Each structure stands twice: as structure tokens, then as C-alpha cells.
Image: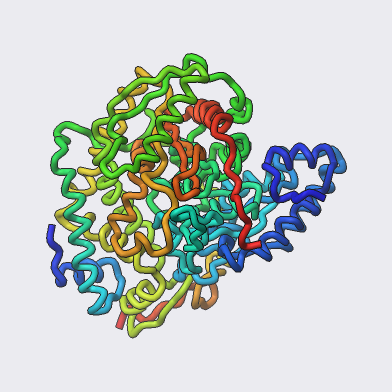
Length: 95
Length: 496
């Protein structure tokens, strides 16, 4: 799979990572190389093979749908770069 | 007094119980060792001497009262991927900035509840993405081992492996008795092999992932790196536990792994997979492998050729699954709730600027690969395909288990390499994990035990792979290799 610069830019936009022109150029080659390398999986016949979901045959644990934690607003905002009264502050998103 | 930092974890435990010295004396010896070595090795990204001495004081009080817990007063290092309450945790990424968790990882809490003392936070590849510890935002870790070239000392700085390079270097340089580590594609076993230490990645689900910074959630597992097989057995027992906070963590009792040490391997069936004889494998790695076979045979095990036909597809499948899961996991670093924020002209611009400044090159590369393979129209062709290949890899092992009890392979294709030697080509670096990554893909336990020296005088390891939740057999078998090969302390403490 050959990835072009426009695709690199589209992917970077989806991933919310700003990239420079120089990075876009370098990533074009690197991503193409990695994607070409993983293409060898096409040799493997996976018809009727289920995707792997667990190591040992056991059911995912379940619990009662009840509140088990909370009342820690101070903790939750403790590491935020910008807060106001237990709210995270972000640039205006609605005009 | 003898150098306390040279003791094994088991020796230190027994000496503390016999009151030969105190935990405060032991802890201070490590604090002094870290002070002098860390400027050269960069194994710790944060030393916490006051925290350690406070824990040691409590341990001494308990020891004096005869109320010692299983790891009472034993100083260990904690990989910076494990959240520590009130103590900076960064995953060695700029994007976490000065993050101070308000909670402790389950694995960490288990260790402190067992009486262990934390000396500090250990360096690693950024978000555990790397095989050389060169991607850390705090700079690379230096391997305490140096190589010889043409019979002459070569002072080239060697990598300690990765991503748990701080853990492996700190253990081999006697800067802790043992360390926590994590393994997504080989990040415990490969660094252990490159530093002459022992490292075990347990079965997926054996240790809780709660409070460990996530990389690829279906592959990540915590485990210890330590000086001996016995020490890793002791540590794993007290790291593992059932945990309501991780739904993939199993509700199985944790066995007394140390009881396996010294048990016979007579009649044990050891599989040797032909697919691990890869192109470009060095003659000395092959010779080491043959030695391992001979040791186990001499101890009464039987050797069986086996085939794991999908082995070669494990690494490419891994480089779909791991980046895909990391791109999802790392979406949380948005500059809003914690960590770094670089203000932009609007919200999206803030996200993009923050993530551009906060993530390193390898992390960006993997997030972008992951975003690509999960983007509209590609999910089935990449992620789903890779997860199906995983099933085939696991089925290879399921078949093998009807004929063998454990599988023996080399841990890495080559010994420790120099700084920058594999940095130019991502795929060359990814190949470091060629022998370890299948184990993560199948969710199995794997241990690396040092087994010999390369022609350059640097350590090399052998890997044992076990059945799901059969870590006990790995400890028992690894001890036979350790008994035959001897231990591999760093010959020259050039940094001291």
C-alpha cells in the first residue's frame, strides 16, 4: 500500500496531530514501508477463522450496575491545565 | 559491611528476617548507589529517597515487632508506566507533563501492601513504544554492560533494551533488588536478555492492568525483572491478584511460585520450534539455543521438534493490532483533563498543537498507522484480519501443548546494540521482538533467563514459553537453566 502525502495529512488530521511539511514527507515513506511489510498477512487464509478475543475460555466478568465510586471532583480536576470550579476550561466551541 | 546492593532479593529478605541489617540501611545503600550511578546510566527518571526511607522506617518497625509482610523492607524500582499516588507519572512522554495520579496502580498497591519499598520511577520508551529505550522523553538509558570488539574494550554506549530499559539497567547495575516492568511485544523479556537479568511476562490477565498507562490493551501485561529466577517468582506472586477494576484480570488464586524453584524437570516435554530458526540468526544465538537444549536434557527433560507455522506472521500482525489499540488509547491525551496543553486558536487547533508538541516521533508514527488501519473502509482488511491471524497463532500453540509442556527459544536475535544503530529504520527495530511477540499475540506466559555471553562479552538470553496460567512450570524450568549457566553480574562497574 502506497500512502501519498494527502493521505498522510488526512490521517494526521483524524489523529489530531499537527505535522510539518517535513514530517509529512518523511511519514509518507515510513508509513508506506510499514503497510507494505504488513501486507504479507494476505498470504494467510483466514476464511472461517474467528478473530481472537480471549486467551483462555472464560466469560468476561460482570458486576451489578451500581455506583461504586464518586464524590471526587477535586481529584478529577487535580491535574487539569485549566479549570474553573470543578469544570475543565476549553476554548469556545459554540459561537 | 559488604555491599548490600549486590544481594539478591531473596538473600536480602532472609537477612532482614535474621536482623543482619535494617531496611533503612539497605534502602540507604540503594539511594547512595542511585545518586552516583544515575547521572551515567539514566535508569531512574525520578528518585524518591524520602518516600523510600519513610517506607523503610515502617518496615523496620514491623520487622522489630515480628509482623513482617512477605516483601517487608525490600527496595524495588517502579517503571514510570505505573501510576503512583501523588508521585509524578509520565510514561516518559512530554504529553503527561507533571501528571501526579490521585490513585495507585493495583500491581503497585499489591507490592506496597506486601511491604516493598519504592526507590523511584524507572525510565522506559515513551508509552512503552520501543525496543531500545531511545524514545524516552527523558533521554536514553545506558546499558551497564560494555562490549569488546576484537578483544579490545569498546566504550560505545549500548542500549539496555526496551521498553523496560530503566528496569533492566537498574536491576543489572544493582540500583534496586527488582523492578516492575510491562510487556506488550517483548518489553520485559528483551531488556532482560540484553542486560543479563531475568524477566517474566505472565499470562494475559494474570496481573491487573488497572493504573498502568495503556499502550495496547489486548497485549499489555505487567511482570517483574530481577536478578534471579527465584526473585522474579517472589515478585510475581505479590504483583498478581484478581481485581474488580480490570475486567480482563482473571479470578484465579495466585500460586506460591517460589515453591517451584528447585523442583525437578524430569520427564518434562520441551518443544523446540523450527520456525524460530530465522534467516540472519547469528551462529552464537543458535549455539546458545543448543546449549539450553543440552542442559534441559541433562536434567531429565525430553526434547521434541515442534512446528508453529504462523510464527512469521506474528510480527506484522502485531504492527496492526498494537498501533490500532494505541491510537485509541492515546486519544485521551487532548490537553484538557491532564498533562500538557499548547493553546491554539480553537479547540481542534489546541488538540493538534498539544499532541504535536507532546508526542515523540515513534509515538506519532504508531498513532498514525493505527488511525490509518482503523479508518473507514480499512477495519476488516487490517485489524480484523490481524485478529484472525492471532487466532491461528494461538491455535499453533494449542496444538503444540498436546505434545509438549514448555517451548524453548532464544529471546532475541542478537545481543545489545549501540545507541542509534537501529534508529534509522523502524522495521529493523521492530525485528528485535521477532521471538517475543508471538507470546503476546497468543496471550501466553514467557520468561527470559540469561544463558551465556556473546563473542562481544555481552549477555544473551533464552526464552521459555508456557501454557496459559502455567507460570509455575516456567520458573521451575528457568531455574534449571540458571543453575547450569550461572548468573551474569556486570563485570566492570565503570560508572562507580
